[in-house]
Image (cartoon, rainbow, N blue to C red; front, side):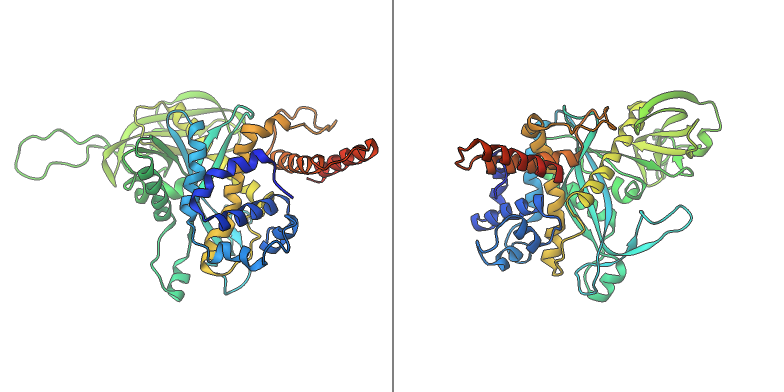
Length: 433
């Protein structure tokens, strides 16, 4: 079997980060990843019908021993995305848990599991914690943004580091590593990072590259300060911080402005208070701080900030709301592409296998934007007549169907009955996908 030629053409710029034999194996793995019901290396070989083409250990060595860099591969994918982005490149950072079994798998440990935890009780689970950096982009074929992952870091807990040796790095430090790498490679571009409160502290704010801005959440009791007063010429160190300002919670106790926004797929009515302030850890950097109290929906009071201090409150809230796209990406990568299923246990295999599922997500969305949307046929569902746009499951099904159609119809067949049989086969494959 082969992937549709337009998708293979999309992959060609990635060949610069691998040798020719490794890239050929990589294409076979991607083919199997698209069609396999379970994403193990041997399962993908069976799905790609590549058993016997070369020894199966060669495909295992692609992840465990071959000389190629996951960072360079991610940056190559970013180069495919960059021509579609006009102006500021919006980035999203987050982390997710990939559940695993086994004590000898590299980097496993107990991590917080948000899917089974509640506000009152936090539950941990055994597995890998991946820190992800993706690009946020709006495509013409959809009414929502897509987060396309490009860079990845495996977070190893302090307990695991203590047992096996090595230097401990926090999740925000890992995110800063990826952010600095991207900003250094593309110093001519302006970037804007959207993260939740776990990555909105001083460990990220104080390490921002010069060409990157940040929007995140803020604690409701955060200490805010006015700009420092001008120097007086008197003896002694001048003040670094101005007068103390009300906290975000106290800001909502005064006069507030009412706004209406269409965010998170709903029409929101809220009362807001805003101010340009400095936080204690970064007294030299003005921030736009917005405190929000929703007027309906039962949601709690929240506060947000952005290093773009000249922005409006509506802009800050709308920008942060776009961060939710990374949650959709993680959900689809786990459910549709088996992000948690690879079973490698050595260090190199662990660090490179699972992230390929995320990169494949980005490649499939890019292919659908370039070619796939022309072949997309919405399924006929009388109970779902108002589905306006293709989901990622539809994109994956379209790629499968186009690949099978190209493979089957390229066979030299002449009998009309056989042609009808093949058309039926293609239809069945579409439904199975």
